[in-house]
Image 1 (cartoon, rainbow, N blue to C red):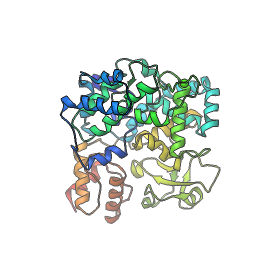
Image 2 (tube, rainbow, N blue to C red):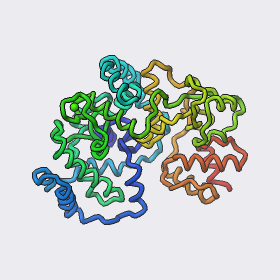
Image 3 (cartoon, rainbow, N blue to C red):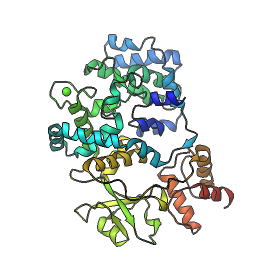
Image 4 (cartoon, rainbow, N blue to C red):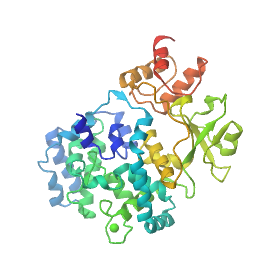
Length: 415
Ligand code: CA
């Protein structure tokens, strides 16, 4: 099993955390409210997708590629791969922020300096962020030549589109988009290749994202995110710019908190200027020149772990993938590529891993106690952390929103 899990992962940490690149936010979530909406029987499913593609102008020769496409059992397995334990945030960071990845990223910055300068000039997105995305998504493209990792996109998406799950309509839209790309863009990668979840090229664009945001930066007439590094990096810059990336601003900074700091202020949502934060005892380790720049405060592993002041660009990284661990990894890798040191404060690494079942129970219990923790999905997100902070504040505990094993036991046992 371990072997298969490794073979299936493209961006090493993404799958380990159960996260496809470009985790879909809108369409998938909407579908959740109406599960099993209008799924045809599996045998009719691909024929229906092919018909839909034809009505959208995909030529018969390309639509016919779906005929008799057998499901990929490894892709089905990947969707069912539910982790028994919830990996702590630092394990994701450690796996992705290796010395080798940092060193290779610095070499890539040098190799591609003129291209990166041109991309920065056109899109206003910092080169270190772009190279960090590249490193996390595909180890700077090095995994794209590995046939045990990279798979034919049509077969992966056909498998997902016709697997009767609530997310099937999302995958179906991506499959039709992949057919349109084959028809319109005539990509050089044949067959079209990507991750098990259909994310393609150096920076792992889903087909609909490719359609909307990929660019031809090297001027050869093709939007080639598979073999052209300039196209792939400029496409990512174009995506970030479209999401609202602020030129010249950073993602944020690690922060030191004063003795006796009120953790209730680390609510992840209240924006204050760096100057206001300093007055409250929050000192950025790498503060921006502009004291008026605004940020929110987060303590992902509670009072015993590092704190971060997050500027608006951090949200743009989350638009690429909604997982906090992912976004912090890209952000911190970009800093390391600039030559900044590792985080000053370490994580509470001695803490025991919590099981997904324990976290689900915790979420349900918090909600029962009057602290709404969101869906009991075993994944501690912003709502769960907010519920924990409210619980801790109400019980006179340090309201840092972090559940260690002792707190889980306490909440389980008593009111
Ligand atoms: Ca091109």
